[in-house]
Length: 452
Image (cartoon, rainbow, N blue to C red; front, side):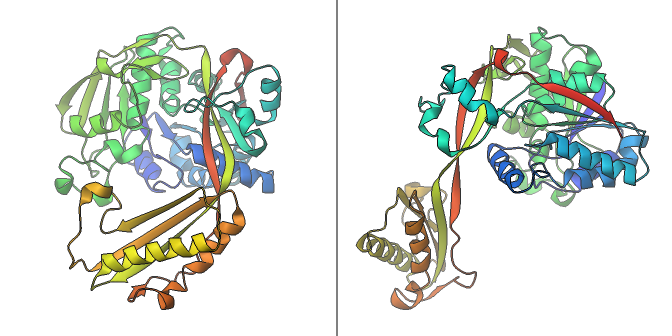
């Protein structure tokens, strides 16, 4: 049995969670998930400004804080903190380890090759259209605006780095669940056609990839009775070689691991539960058997899977114009009526000025921002309403003009407006997501291991 914990659900998750896991009890592996689709484009922009950037810059600091446990207790770390620049991330980690007296005591591995941005024209010239999975459009429609393009690799390159002796493995883009599946492949010797076991490891990784979301965080069931949210524990897999596993957390930590909490996470970001496609297999969520084995222990068993496809998913980001979001707060009496009137006035003014927008969206926070028309008409006695209005356009000048029209309405529109002290709304570039597929035989991961 091996114990695999996850201490990060996204770039910006709790900085204390990984240390809680490292210091709260025995572990074999610690995984850290930093990347989302939008994150890759942010990192690409950072590297364009500085070739040494492009990775999760707080990861080396985390390694510094946890180096004692990682090195002396032999806890192996697997993270996709490399982002667009895994090599620079590795160098930063090596520098931290050496500076803190751990040089020569641990090896750092990288998995690269996922960044295919420089090869897009090559693929297009070969007739590989990289069609948008949602719209069917070929990538050529937005090629000039592309910011980043990355293949989702699977778990076997991670396992290879671990087999080469890496104590820390840094990847670029990979399937989220691969961070946990890679250690299982390495420890149990699972083969590339062990579909049921690979599916079980994939589901285990999927269950913990969002951190505390499976240990009671963001859990709809019994949230009011959740113990010690302030000290919530992060998830741990206790994995067996036969593909069965238990989800648990360290003793004495807050939160709760129940069939309900893990089920909510299992349903997160999946389509057809019978066909959860990853680079390593197709997992069948309908075969999962859950058992509340003991308090804060849920056992998974009987998981089945099917052969992997011959395609990789590709995450492409591209520039899609500009946006700005502004807010105005209206107070009683007639708060909602005032907010509705301001929304109408602003729209009329923008029409009269001939501003060009692809979309204008208004929300009335406190009334119907979450539920829309289903919320019904609010009480006339509602104390305050926030008008949140956003615009989107390929014409940056129109968006900039919109930002200048918000503040004046405090004096030339309905009364009792506030909330303007935070300054003018900011014009931001829109980064859009383009999912596509690429034959696996056109790209290959590269694994390297360096001693600190």
